[in-house]
Image (cartoon, rainbow, N blue to C red):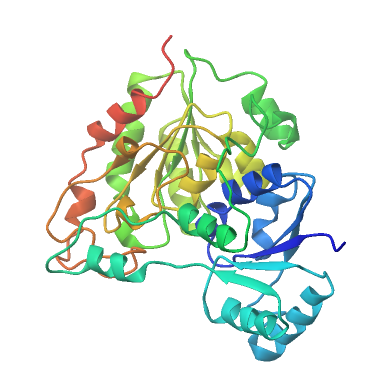
Length: 357
């Protein structure tokens, strides 16, 4: 009898791939007899490589090594050597669609995601908005597996065991400076802040975020604040904040790697993020995440995994949401949806999630 082997395809951005982790983990647990291979971009390996014994990861750089039709044909030949019995396309774009077409022609069992674009268009249109919760990405992913004959109940908690990731895996200098002398506790909480996102419509103004940091350091002088985010411009801002607020740490710069960031996140008492990849990363470690939403809205289905709705901060405006991904220019030109959220409100929500001494 041929061993069941499922291929799960999801390229795209970090957050979209991260949202597939609870599905893959639950599938692996509930179907221990099947093999699962996740096909994604190389950055996603840390999400899946230690997730379960029957889960494997396959990296594919579709922008370079497997670029264009010729590259996708080469990738397809590589995939067929794995002898998959089912293919789940969780992306449904041109690249994954081409691979899906090849698998269909090869008479594989194939299913793909329904993105519910009609409902999302109604959510963001400028007139007669329909403010209705759309199916989450995780639900859409789950539906694909069910159509393949693998119904899944999501029972995922964290990519790490109880107690969080192993802090001894972090760089030695980081451990010595921050983890051996300043363990998290109710009196010395560890707080994460990821203040940036891919688009301006999803970024809380920098001056207001600095006010959040100022309030936190004033009210919780023994707290350690770890800053997460990549890019030279972001690191320049972080370095300036670290100079002004000594309890701040440019964590991403010092940890140098997605896996290390996940380990640290798993020990935070609370994370503050935008509607961004860091929201999804932190959610996968099982910690509470407060998220700030401007041009986008949780109704589009991209809330962090297992995060209650009241942890999403946003203000009601006739024009909001105006974008599913936050990549459209502000209709008003002033991003009032972000500027209208007061730093005090953000801090109060974060404090409600901190442990009591």
